[in-house]
Image 1 (cartoon, rainbow, N blue to C red):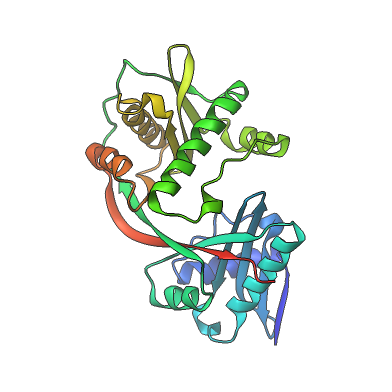
Image 2: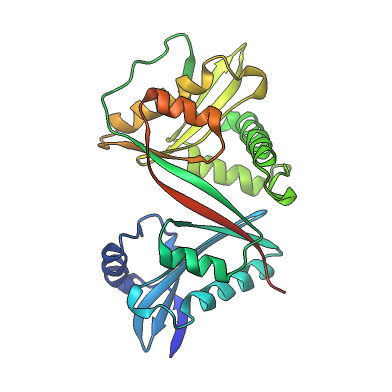
Length: 277
């Protein structure tokens, strides 16, 4: 019998063991909203649903011994109930090139699927461009970084043929500002030119992400300078290698990453689906 309940601290050891055996990375799951699936009282999987305005990410994991029992589908339905309660109509999630995950994703009949390359760099510190000013992100940078990132992300999505609702840019809210300040201070950097912020990048542990440059300043080395600086910052913080995700088809960004030494390790796929009525 399947039951779904909120995560408790006593579940940690079971989930760590279950996900380690499956090579699933459980570290970044958000414990305060995590739901645990139990089959006859035994931990069998989990749902990590991160519901935010116009950005609902769900992550479903079911241990191999408990698959084909409807647990994954039940967790997706639970996530969609949460989306509906928040007034959201679309969610997204990702999976790697693994047969079980791909087969399950297809049963969900997603509206759209995109692909992302996971790339790593494990070399020495890289030479930095001293002509580019790069400094830590500060709260006063919020609006500049928000618009650089959102406009760049929407432009890329349009170019890659994403659905229209994924190519929209929304006005920032106070909640978004608070999330930026909570998540980005200490791990984000900006590059400047002509007295203003023209590029932005973020690191989360060993991962480089959210790198974007104002369209008017592209092709001038700002993206490369940020990528090098962020990679070095990861290595300086003691991680043996740096990693990132690059959208398949984002050839300009991939060229930068490969030029400084990143190499593809595997490909993941992101599915987008309209919440069932």
